[in-house]
Image (cartoon, rainbow, N blue to C red; front, side, top):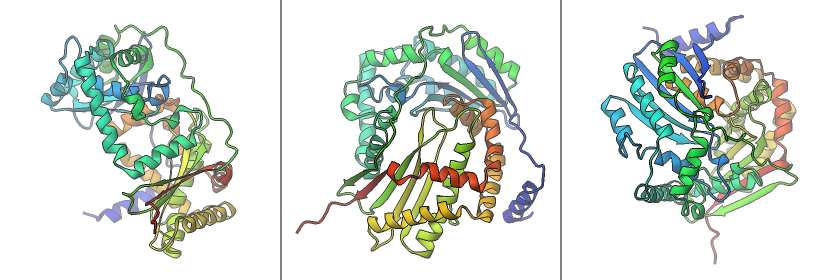
Length: 446
């Protein structure tokens, strides 16, 4: 059998042929009478399905003073209904050989199960039940509040890096709720209660605010029948308001912050810039920014790695990343971990020099083509993961994009030019519109 490298070479050769295009996912969409959107991604290679319900509500949609309520409600959704005892939902899924979980972001909250295809109706019925019939008591809510407070302790309070990221986001967003942490500010989390959770639930957990995504071994007709049976009878919320949020004012000055913590053993520098998100029907600038991040800071051949690590020995680690799938403006991010004997100021100056030079020269053509080839290969491999496809569509549809946008994205990436990447860098990487954070150990006093 040929070695993996031979297969990769053959794949690269195939992808480089003129006229080769990626086939569209086998997607069917429809809407129930109550406003619930349904996406079916058919994949019959294994007798398994992923069932996901995505709500168009996240941490950035929380009422003022209730930061963390979206994540808190995610926990409480596993407590029970009139039909299911607390914890029974997950127990039933596990007894039927499946797995389940949930997650909250700034823009959405999602619940999912991966289970044998012939159990799709089972999990759909239970998910529909808790969409309409969640039951909560103080005996369940208050101990769960302690759970999320402890989660904040473990994930944020005990991590200097997490504390810096939290402070960095707060400095980035002066007016937009993206500046509040998804898990919540501690003093507000401590006041969350049953009434707040139920009010948030009754407002946002409705079929006309949800997207059902089913991926795997099921037919569109089967999914439609099951969805109409289980979700079709749930009443929509007629008072659901548009997702309008406070927006950021123009940034007129550079922002800087320094966090010192005795637990820091390795200082590092973080930098962010406000950047446009992927807009429906107009994803070209986001694609240019995505490729800019790949060129600058992804992998051993990236610009920052070559210059700051290999050539100049300024850094031991560098990174650049951009995720444009958000409802409102997102960020373009950079990070540098300096080498021994290099100060954060020296690392920052070196970073700025590389960015300035990049804007003047643009990306290397061969490097850019190699990145595009890797992205096409990853796109093909990702099609083997029905759960990943379900997440891709659910995240997009709850962040203002459409099925057509998702399917157009790979080709848009391939069409991005070096000139577009440089233009995006010039627009976004403005030093006067940056937020720079430093994570350091405390100063030594004599």
